[in-house]
Length: 295
Image (tube, rainbow, N blue to C red; front, side, top):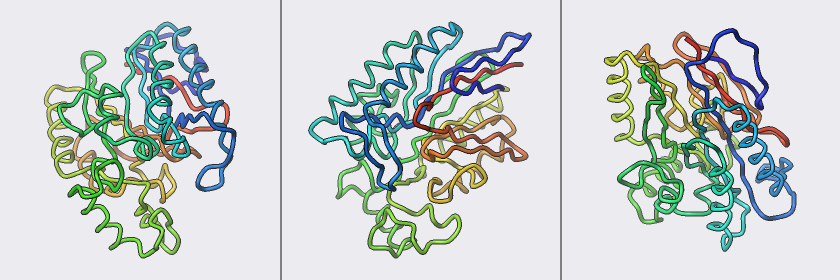
């Protein structure tokens, strides 16, 4: 597998089995440049220009079969009366790509719209408000897309059982009044903040079944998630709440060849004895790449 950062082409004498585009954390908003919740500079209107650049690059390459959006297509600072308009504006740019785009839901998406509406807008292939699914881009390969906010405080109604249970977990794990603050938490416990979430029990069972089926069919698997699942590739405060539970399942199977995620803007990667883990880096000018799978 070969990643082409920001569309740069690596010479190869072989044709890939398939190539696909990846992009993370567009975080568009029709507001002046500013700073994120953590004080990091943000270029809200410029982000859609970078998306346009990505789509143009993928189309020019000619062999990009599909693209994957790793969530957070609009920013939490987007005026809420413009949330729907902003989502549609970004989706209109994705529609200019010559192939299909597969979407994920991120925390910034859920700051703006309920998950039930996002699932519909993003055309996520599910018969419920859950946003996890899988697809096969070619024989012998499967892409698994996780819903990292399946169990979270975001996106569900305030009185929903998931919201209540998630808030209870945060109260147990994070003593801060501001549940978005990891202050005082140590190591990987810093992940227990409100802007993160977890894969729910039903999804965990589903993931196990999918990987078992992929193994039976001798398929290689790439797992995609908005939230990172490996402390070696991510800041502790950006990790999925139950990353350890999910990775324990992943490590039961030899079919998983790579995991990709967004969310942690500084980027990172790691290699363990089972799979390659990468966090898609987002900078002022570049937040996209293409990935090629070779034999």
